[in-house]
Image (tube, rainbow, N blue to C red; front, side, top):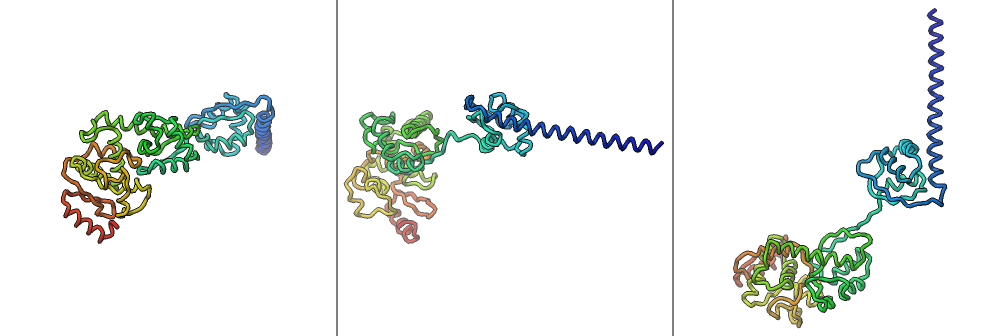
Length: 356
């Protein structure tokens, strides 16, 4: 009796195992046929080719992505695509974003796009503070591919506009000095050179107007051009943020006393030369930017300037400093109202190799 029971039990187990293998085989075969069939369907009908806009939200599971692709017509079988992702171990590797997808891609081609992610629609450019307008255009050209001459023409032909320039003033490239705000920008890939320049001009206007919502122009500054010119001098002369308001105070005190500003960066701008030391012969250049020779401010800014240089003007402290000097290799400056002290500081800085 027991032997009969055991034999029957064994036979049932063998039969059940056979049935299970049969169903698994059929399932795998059906899945493979389903995937293969969908691959063929997706790529066969060229006459019905469409480019379909698809958005895959962040955090979408493989089943959700499959549903989106099926509902939009990119694939013809949600189940087949899910099975393909599982077979290839790709269920958690597809990237969210907005895509433009043809409806004739094989699963391999489709997943290759979804693994890579959507194409970039913007790119980054960075323009540092302290560049002359010519250097700014060269920097933009290097990062965007637009020709320097093309960019210059966009400024002086009236294609780019600034509320700080009249139409006549905008025809002179030098009048654009300081009006392209240095910053890091995200640029649309469709933007042309004119668009990029206008973005930079608008950024300066926006930041300046924002500053004026809580401040008025200091009484020692007459207009925007003077404000921007002083900001450019502060940018050129200051290495540390803490020194910017103090440099501004020296400029203010010298202007109020009708003293020569004697700022080297302005002389180098007049010469259009970048070098570490201004020589006596350089000081002979006859230019309104030579403020060793002419009192008052230069006629325009001498470079691009940042937010901190503008803010420093509003933070200018009350003092009687009329001299400053770099006295530390880390960029720290010393300020004084005493000429003899200034000379002593200068000699010491030379001995220590801080200045040439």
